[in-house]
Amino acid sequence: MKPRVAEAQRLEDGYMLRLKSSLAEKDSALANEIIQNIREHIEEAVNESSENEISAVKMTEILERLGSPESYINEFSGLPSEKQSNAKDAKILTEDQEKYSGFLSKLWVAYLIGTIGLYIPIIELHFCSIIYLALIIGIFVKLKMSQTELSNSIIGLSIIQLVLLVLAFAISTAGIYFPFIEVINTPVGIAIAVIALVIDWKVLGFVSEILKKTGKNEVAKQIEVSRKRYVIASCIFYVVALMVAIPFEMAFRTRQPLIMDLIIYPLLNLPATWLICWLFLLRPISTAKQSIKL
Image (cartoon, rainbow, N blue to C red; front, top):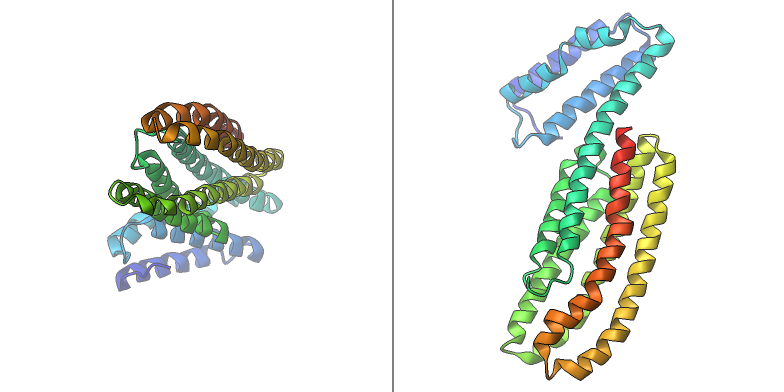
């Protein structure tokens, strides 16, 4: 929880005191739900703020967006008591859907950039992959509402992957002057491939969790199937690619390294990897976004 300056804390406490006073005549269960809901909205807005310590001005903005406690309660006061809780839940669900829809849109863009950047030998800096991983980290850090152990592990693995990509570039650069050092590229390359699969597995698992929270259980099952197929298809591709690449490497690499890097590898890799990513990453994420909007 972010710290507040003294005045900001007084504003928040005063707001909550007014809310509790307004709810004094309400059903206690409903009152507690509304209080908890408003606390969560305040905390979410606080976490999204760029301020390290919430100022009085920022707290005033947050509370103004919520509206007065009395007006918030009046949204449900015209309903029979047994329907008030359902109405509140429906409002929360709508807000969640909007947030998750925006999250999935950004996630789709991140994966599109990552897919475009696969196996493009001209980009030796892994430029697209670095942008994709930076976007993944930013997207999951910003999604404060659903920060879980799963999302935290995605952030951690993405940071590790960034470090490995930088290391791979450093090894390739050093290999120009010290050819023996390129032997390290093999374990680093394997680690990059494995961690990439783990990240994608966890991301699709997170998308499945979102769908379950919004009541889209059938689509969640489709996402679970997609992530299993993605891992299986990727592993098969890696095995086949190695079986094909090694003979080409032995035949052409020593004599025609540019042909290998600029023609052979892209022709072997691009169609299959783009198809796998489209079928089992981009399309499922797009389907999840559309289902949440419904």
